[in-house]
Image 1 (cartoon, rainbow, N blue to C red):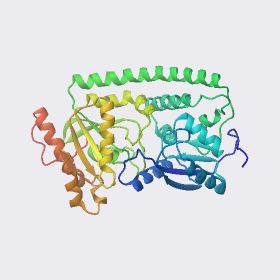
Image 2: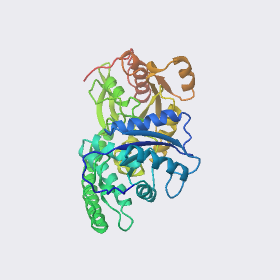
Image 3: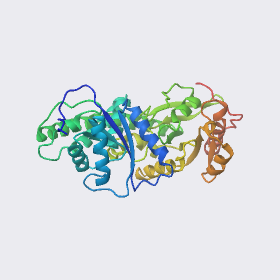
Image 4: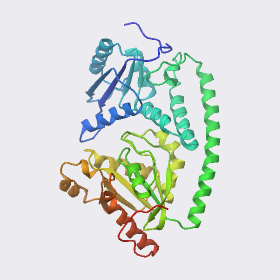
Length: 383
């Protein structure tokens, strides 16, 4: 099969979505993991020409995929005239290049896919700067290799790149752009720090919603603050931190922030870039971890969130909020499984009555920590 050039200007491409069950993946329900991969693709606006799943016993350091599976992939690519492959796992730059050359296709890994989703969903100046820095770092790691068509790294999934560019020129451009973006981010961080100091000086309690992506954080935010934060059933629907005043029975008890969602194998570049935003968690008075209890892998999601919090050196008082109980077939069994996670409440964020257990917990927490008058029966009110 003749090799396709990466610098073709064709508007769209035939895409293979390749889900891989890697040996390091200890997920109990691999079907749910693959469904998450499909949702990532959907969130990026990609419509795959073909979808294929495979399980690996070992990882080939050169291609990630073992030789027998490579032959299988070559056959699928030839049969469907595949031009691009989106893989569910993170690859090294060398593995990405080797696969591209062997299969004569563009290859995009999980990291690139998530970065593109973040780029599309970031709207604030700070969010855009953070994502831009992460994407530039990722591109820089893909510049190595003499004679590599750099348009492969600079292009987007589903669209061809602008053509070959000199590696040295591209590297300088990336460094210059990253320097400019960091300067911009520093200025935005100063504004955030000033706002934080004002809040800390006034001793206004700060509650932060955290959790796995698509667990329902924005929906709970809207229910608690009567706001209208974008809440869609897709991964990373909202990225920019939103903060609203929280009132219960006409009493302002603090401010509530909705933070970026976490996910398995969240690109390290993103964690680094979003540290300025996530650093707010270190100043939170209460973390509200939202868990989608209807997801078969919800226990793994808790571990992933805890791992990222440890990386960020965040150790704060926390309540576990098990959401979407209305989607669980056996609610009583789910409640028993949630029992080890304390303190916790079980809610359905789609209704005002459904979030009452969380409102009651917050009211009690506020009374205990700030010697406030009783706030029962709990009722959310607008400012």
